[in-house]
Every structure is written in C-alpha cells, then in structure tokens.
Length: 222
Image 1 (tube, rainbow, N blue to C red):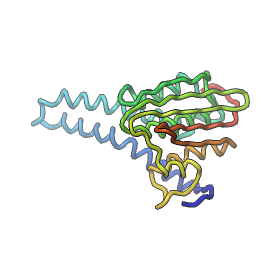
Image 2: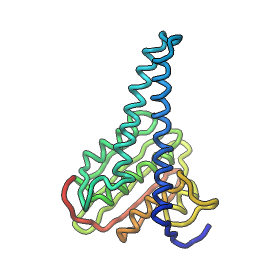
Image 3: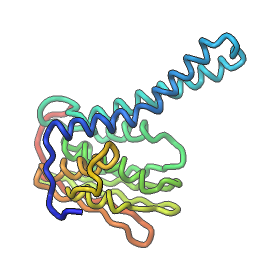
Image 4: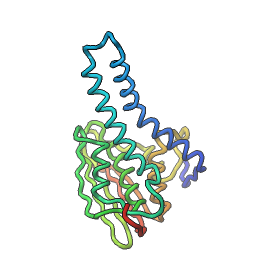
C-alpha cells in the first residue's frame, strides 16, 4: 500500500459513497419488497401478520439509515451549523437500537459543529464494525471555542481493527483499489483532515479506539 495521502476526484468519491449508501439500504428495502410480496400472495394468507411485522421493522430500519446517512455522508443543510448532542444521540441509537451493540453515550458538549458531528457519526459506524460479535462502544466528545475532541472506545469479544481501515482512515490507498466498503474510513479521515484536524485509530489489548481532534467552526444551530 502507498504511504502517500491520496486525493480522489469528486466524481469518484461521489460514486463510491453512493455505492456505500446503496449497500446499506439494500437490506431493509429488499425486506420491504419481500413483505409486500407475501401480502400479495393469496397462498400465504396465514403469513400476513408476519409480513406486516416485517414491513414495519424494515421501514423503520430504512428510515433510520436514511436520516443518519443524510448527515453522515451528505451536507445535512447548507453552510456552517451546529448539530445538537441530543440529535446526534437519537440518530446513532436509531441506527443501532438496543441489541448486541451497547452505545455508552458520554458526550459532554451540547452540540458539535457539522464537521465534528459528521466525524462522530462516521466513527460510530466504524466503531460498531470492530465488535461484530457484540460489545460496548463508549462515545465521548467535547467542544471548546478552539477545538472539538471526539473519542470512541470499543470493547467486545474478538474486537478487531482491520489493516484496510487503518490505512484508508489515514488517507492511504487500499490494495485492489476502492470500493463501497473501504471508501467509508477514507471519507471519515478526509472530513477531519480537510478541517486541519487529526485522526487516529489503534487496537491495544483487545480494545479498539478512535480519536479525532478538529478545529472548531462557528455556526448556527440546525
């Protein structure tokens, strides 16, 4: 892998992020379609209640993903802005409802400016992926008039941090080129670097940590 900080063209980055969004939505949208097919099947009337439950769950999942990704990957509004801590927590918990992943929300700031908020959201996605068998993700963040500090600590059975995530988060090219999966850590690091901030990830004694520091950008509440 190259050690140089990579620059992608705008069209390449957009195409890769779109591929990632489609990948995240194909599951719940496909489940919605399956539920509707069951409702239309006259030979499966005994499964209509199950189909309705499937549609409800899938619709909630699709909505949660869209609301989250609108800000994490999109502009989420025009111009500098502040994302309230309560909104950030709601979006993250909506994406990862109570289950095998516990989000320990310890954000002290009332809100984070848009780059810091988007960095936190993207780091939550990366953090959850490091504990595929379940675990706890401790989410901490502070913001002063000069800088925002975001820290995530991930603990769980067989916690892992893939080399590809380390390299692409640092702005390096992955072996075999980019795809809809490895573009995500690259984009996360890019958000931080474009503000003049710093980001790093490491694993020690089975605990994965992500830390990002970004200069504060002033703006209005969303």
